[in-house]
Amino acid sequence: MPATDTHSSVVGSGILANLLRDDGYWPTPPRSLDETGLTAGMVESLVLKYLALIGTASGRQIAQQICLPFGILEELFRQLRARMVICHTGSAPLSDYYYKLTEQGQERAATYAAACAYVGPAPAPLADYIVSVEAQTIRAEAPRRENLERAFAKICVDPSLYDSLGPAINSGAGLFLYGAPGNGKSTLAKCITMCFGQSIWIPSAVVDDNQIVKVYDEAYHEIVPPTESSLVKAEHDARWVKIRRPTVMVGGELTMDSLEIRHDPRGNISEAPLQMKSNCGCLLIDDFGRQRMEPLELLNRWIVPLEMRQDFLTLATGKKIQVPFEQLIIFSTNLEPKDLVDEAFLRRIPYKIEITDPNEKEFHDLFQLYAASYNCDYDSEVVDYLIENHYKPRKLRMRRCHAYHDIPLEMKPEYFDIVVRSYFTVVQGMS
Image (cartoon, rainbow, N blue to C red; front, side):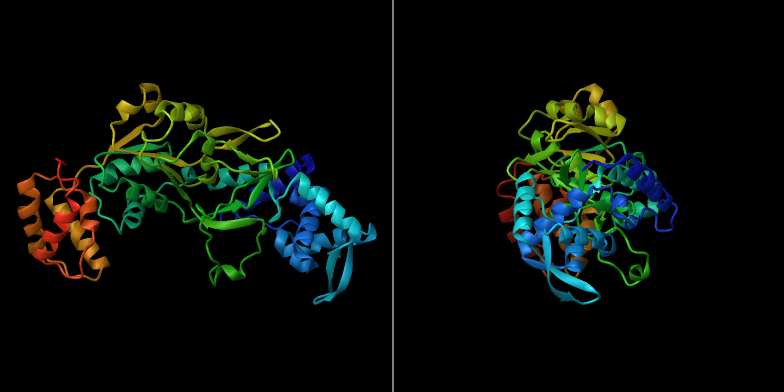
């Protein structure tokens, strides 16, 4: 249900106050039903649909399932009992009761399920989500060189690349990574997210105009487990989950539908688009130019959001909503950016960084780095043998991915002879 004006002022001010906490953004638990921003009808529907699914549950189990404090649900339980929608089946610990649906309650639950099949954590109002994104945006941070070096510690990066990456990452304006395949553009893009603060809060779902849109996605969001120190901190609103800053990566499978709210008409549940799931993180468009739509079609969709930092989406009801467009967009491509897009769009992606082939020193560094990760002794003479006997005679260009390929537990020339015969059979034309 849409939030009331009263809720917006009460909760909005509460959220803004929490921005001053030492912890940064922190979603505090609501102290009343009004502070949830949800109507009693929506909360009732979540309770009844859960009981219809599970059969019998205690009040605290219901509260845990829909992620609202038990204290603010007790009055609702009393009202539902008085209306003979639910009934007691016995006492539960801590002055609680076990509940089940009455016949009338089953009918109401079926009606609610027909209108919307969503069962899970109560959604947060869209207005609260917008405030959270603005509070946790990566543009509010300014990673320094040491942050970059720490984020890229497990990969080999040419030190001169920091001079280009630093301003691009700090701008939050998006960038093109381009160059020959196999030089680690996708790996580099994944590491960029680590330059920023390591965790953010997102709601499991948001609601506006009585439409629930799921935000949390296990495919892209990794929950941060509580640490010993965090266990003694103030409680948080259980509707929100703490995740690592997301890196949402899509490739050739990307379609225009993925960039809009996807609605399931059977269950009347919606799913947030990829750019919304990547808010406060990075959105990597891998193999840009090889999607099933024309590059210009994709870029035209994002010209306004890139400039305004706001996106406009359409709910299933037809209502247009405005949501933050607060992520670092990275286009990774093997093609020249100028061959893909026009000048107008290139101005909106101000940073174009070429990832070049490694030189011999970097090639050695790559083998040394990954030999250590495989607990293998590094032997520079064997790598020299590989270069002199395979790369130079065949005029093969070195690629950063070559050093990743099946590093044996021992470095021996004959091992590389075997690997080269199989690996370069189909790519020997590379030059």
